[in-house]
Image 1 (cartoon, rainbow, N blue to C red):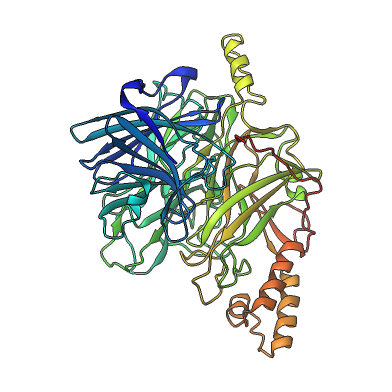
Image 2 (cartoon, rainbow, N blue to C red):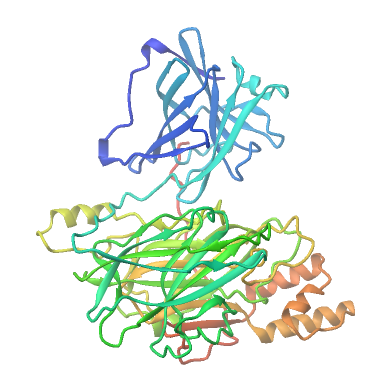
Length: 594
């Protein structure tokens, strides 16, 4: 079944400006033959698409899928027939063959074609409750297009194996925030923190660190935006960058320029722990909300910063010379709040191990109440953005927020995560509060409840960050670590007011892991190496040992890193803690069309 509409009855409608909807756009292919524009209507839970195709053939398809392939995809197919345009909501099976959906959930708004240029405007609800339809959410969406080089007159024509078709995919966040980016003020100033002609070794994974002095700032200033500076030609090898403030004892820190050491034993750089910027592939410039900024300068403030760059060099090139980094824009006109960045998730240690041959293995890192009660302010924090991070095996990441055992709305979720598209998610403003704030007195700001993730009682809450991994094609264990084939599980949250808590992460307790190895090695007669990485590498991986480790991750004790911005650990007992548990989980109702 498809919907045929006479062309003469199709009204000419462009993307509207109703409800102050923002128009977003992206090119779906490198040649510019497929351009997509879209608007998000949160009130109607609908996305309005406009697809502009440069093709001489009659017909094309657009859609979405979980993995960016044409298998199990949700697509809409367009073609003209006489004076009518046909619209067919379709889906593909495990083999990529097209079928017409019984429920037609894409709705045509406008269709024009002239001299090989075709423009089609259509809409679809976020969630249709149709099992063949993709559920549009705030995470990453794998967009698809199919441009056949022959005319089509039915959906089944796309199943012709001999037909030549141009197919492509593009990662994008469809449900973007509607929070306005504040303009840079007239008194804005800038500086760069970057490596300087660093000669990168011909190794697959390199972490390079360089320290440099900050600008002379006798009085406090606020950073209000930062952006990546990627050296031309190195776009594919600069995987992610982090900038840290260093302590004022610069005797060993000043002038460091070389490979970084591990997180646990970085000697020269041990005071460089206070994160002020985090960037990864796919991210663009990041602007702070108008009421907050990262503080720099002033008496006793840090005078040095360190940039850490992860280079992914699978071809082991010997000719990489890099000067990439981060550009900061700051103002001496202080904003109302100091902003901060906090690292949540799992410690990237070998004890964060993922068994081989798993297609959806989940591990959770905890920020327990014992840490948040020490590190966060009693009045709570307001989280306005989040950036998720794993390496190659990661396929989904989310952070749950728990208070007194009761689950609250999540602090970001990406069910279709890709390490090659790690954009920061800006949280949407609360519409009611925004309206009240705009109606309020000029110069007065009402920011309580402004963002979706503000909580007065954050102190003492629990934050649980989970990552899902696919190691189905790996024959050996995947360990936590810095390498691109090792794994991480992180959520960098951006918030205000700033707190002394820099990192709140966990890993399975060392004592419980020792008992785990003792049992496994005694059962299978394998020698105990007394080293976590070697023990995991020599383990006999089978359904029993995998289930045993999974049970330990889900129920066993944890060791916690509750770290200050100075790099020091908060006082307290951080080993062999009981896992926090959710007593009353969230049960959100789906807003979909029956």
